[in-house]
Image (tube, rainbow, N blue to C red; front, side, top):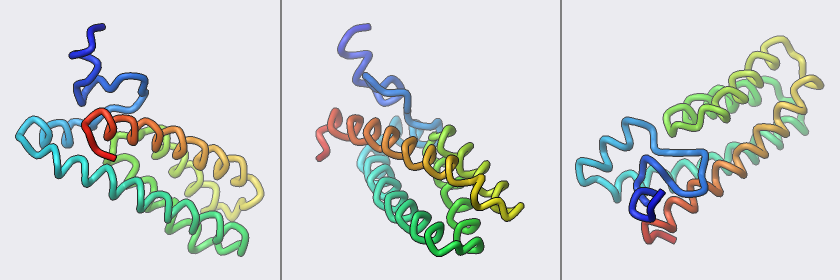
Length: 131
């Protein structure tokens, strides 16, 4: 794989994440700055939601946990992060059964997956010359 190929949005180097088709289309239409801003927004919002999830878990607030898991499922899916979306869906399903204790490992996996995804997305942004 040559350097030119690795630096394209659809094949980010050292990353399991790549731009989903809708963002790739925007990128190809000359809207790279919009795509980069959407990625930054996802990173910021998701970090906030993860913190809120942890807080809601500590408070045993099932309603907040379900709402946050549902929100993370949608935003992760839109950003092409299917692993996170799947974990958020599983968390949401478990919480619907009021299985708070069973959901703790899933929450931990979701947090780890976000850390991994965020690192990939930040690496992508750095390759595009964004901080």
